[in-house]
Length: 158
Image (tube, rainbow, N blue to C red):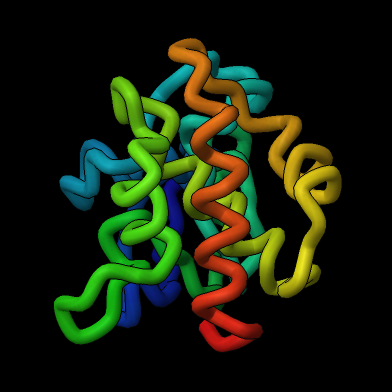
């Protein structure tokens, strides 16, 4: 059903009139032109479509537009501040944790949400926290140290 829905997107207020059951992934990619959020499996398993909704990692391919009404949505395009890359983005680049780059936006946003809950994780906790984001290239062995480094740089600050 078509409804008018307001939410914040990357810090800016957005008002859309659209089918409220349409998945957030397509609103972001098609309507808003934010193509950093990727379509992977379409089933919520791979994590390529991960975005933040009120700082919580969610699968945008499984999140209807109506579920973000009045909330704050952040995509990979909105994680940097004042044209400065977020520490997670910098660490992923430094550690070459983005082989093909397709899963990277979802990985970074999942890591962001994870580090908000656990700002000083062990390597084992990072592996467990990132377990539901898949990387077909096999960059996991570089993703883990990237997240460790970002956590140290951030020291709980976001």
